[in-house]
Length: 378
Ligand SMILES: *Cc1c(COP(=O)(O)O)cnc(C)c1O
Image (tube, rainbow, N blue to C red):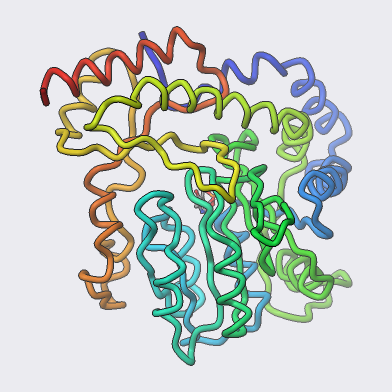
């Protein structure tokens, strides 16, 4: 048995003819940069998300950086984000000489805890970056209310949740990434909508921000060789846009397949007191970028070894909270402020999750997990 976390090969084989033809056409037309596929993909993704503007860029990290550059923030301004996320979210804050203010997360959804956002706000706070972690939305009703009350920008990090819906208590439903001022996503191959290399995009309903973002991503230039502001060079390759155009029509089915695998896992583990299965928030669809368990008194390292010996991959997202990262030591976080993240870093484990898992494979994985957990902890 060899069961990887993601299975991009099997997924590719099902759409191979279309992907290959689209890539071949880009090469044939030598439209490598800003080609037709980039322009069409922008429109198709905007339509899918029901958002006014989609600006593609080089990767998800660039998307976050460009989004923040468009808001006119100045060094020393504080940006609030989650302590339990991939480094890119807060690395870009620090890179722009803004101050990353990390906040603990909700123990059930792993997303930023709105109560703690309120407590972290100071006169210097300018923006919040909620991260829709592992495939489900943060509590955007609460976050948007807080942002409005304190006049803060909201940049949604949607790298792990593209296609997920947030349903407001006020009655509306929107795709995550289209609720705040700006949404950012990544098309890294293993994301729910992944290309075959690096890629990313920025979304907004604000015309003025869209114009600024487009300019910043292109050397601060609207008219060729006339530069209005300091920008960067961040583009989605046409070949990547071609792949994404082939995959976007499948995204909802891909997310459905992930949910089906999650249902299987949930059921298999429901009576095991040593394993806490993922909580599904009432206000969000969960598209399971990761299927992450919280272990209760289980030797995680030994469990991972056991799974490995059975040919099953597993991973820890994330082993080190951001406040404990060496790169962030200068910010002098108070280690007592993050009890939930600290606990999660020690006790979470993610199982294989992708669009290609069948029941036989899932059964084998679940049996292998339970065999270890029950044998060692009865
Ligand atoms: C993947 C990811 C990013 C960064 O995306 P890249 O395309 O790898 O730069 C940012 N935030 C989160 C939460 C991610 O998972």
